[in-house]
Length: 263
Image (tube, rainbow, N blue to C red; front, side, top):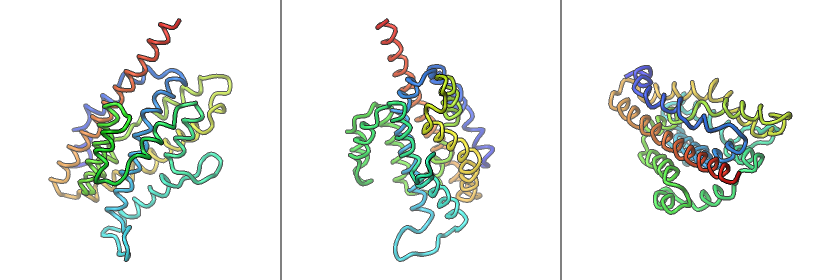
């Protein structure tokens, strides 16, 4: 199987994401706030996927030994550098997750819940139970549970599949459009969110996305079983993303219904 064939097999579920009704519900900063309060878990677990790849494909143990594939190790380390310790709009080193939390606070979204939830998570052996017991809705629990199911396979090509193909593509451009229409100040009113979104577009489109695809090719090579695994887990990752989108859509509709009733 090739990347082209893989992408063809994922076309239907990717079209579901691309054309999801969620996007029609996002038309205000208040909607962005609601979206971010749920989507933040996908931002956080992305970092866990990345660190799992770093653990599997580079040397993070002592004594140090060379990585089995230095080219792949370099890809991962470059992505880690920017995702875990990028510079924010003020030139301060922060992870993209921390930058996302700053952007949430800027639009008055609740960050205390996500901090409490991830603060309750411990080691990988107990993470499934901890996620199940967390103050999360079913879609959020299923999304995170799948991520750590993937991580616990300890198979780099499966982890890389969820990392590469299980991400969103439309949200940054849409958010920028909303904040540009949110008032006279537009993006100036939300510098942290604007910067995060533009940085997200720049890195994922120009650097991290192409890097991740190259990594997939190196990890799978001509091994058909690995490509079959990648197709299965990529499909499941995207299906969990669709379910998360549907959960957020439901919440947005409820909020707007309550607003109409109040009027």
